[in-house]
Length: 366
Image (cartoon, helix red, strand yellow):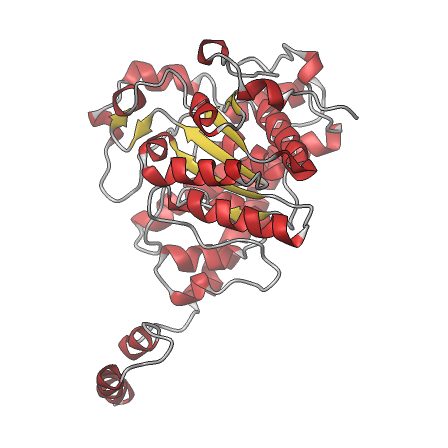
């Protein structure tokens, strides 16, 4: 089947012509049948369930954090279409390089949920991944995952693998040097990488319009000679379409693609002290809540008779049980010791550190 999107045209498009691609409007109505993705009704229901799973996980993670049972957490509510629909378009053998807000994609890609919880708590076991999981732990350094993705993508190309490396950053990440270095390197070597910019309007508290004068973030791909496309990040079907089409294009040897998703985080940047009410207005938040990606896709499914309130209630109960089981495993993990921290610093432990390890080990065994 021919591709629905001409990515080559986006290499030379005028920045003023870059507009967000949409499939569903805010009322769940199909506004562009030509761009409707090749998904069955059953697949769209599964996509919605994964998005609902992510919303429940966000709500529960927030509560667990407030209870002191989780550590670092970056809320994801509002970004389900951007995150989950993009992951839904990928293969398990594609290599994921997530940022710290991209834990839902990481779990859906194959990371056991208890591992994600352990990572939040700063436990070393949260970074020990299954051998068949094509992913790295979430990157905390802003934009660094773009450089890593370029390198992984080049490796895939050299191996002749029919896979891509894909990564995410926020709008603020596009102002980091690593962002341009990553897309430029991948473009120069025609490496199969998909770079997603989740434009939620703020780099913590800094509005997007303040941290870059570029009218769109998608157009930043033009400087590196790669396609830059913008999509309505609250429209799951549009995000899926763009991501799946970008994957086909990249796997066929055409090089990387930069995708800007226009989305919004309903909560704070992280639960580590950020208060969004200090820099966002109630009117702005209300306008974005009308675009809720779950409401949009749920309305579409409801009108087709594919989803019901009873199904949703039952599924939410199922997800909560999954979270309870994962949290139980998390809290059963062995407590970390200072001696173990020190043992993990070097591959070959120097004598001076060996002395400290022995000292702490003796205290821990006492």
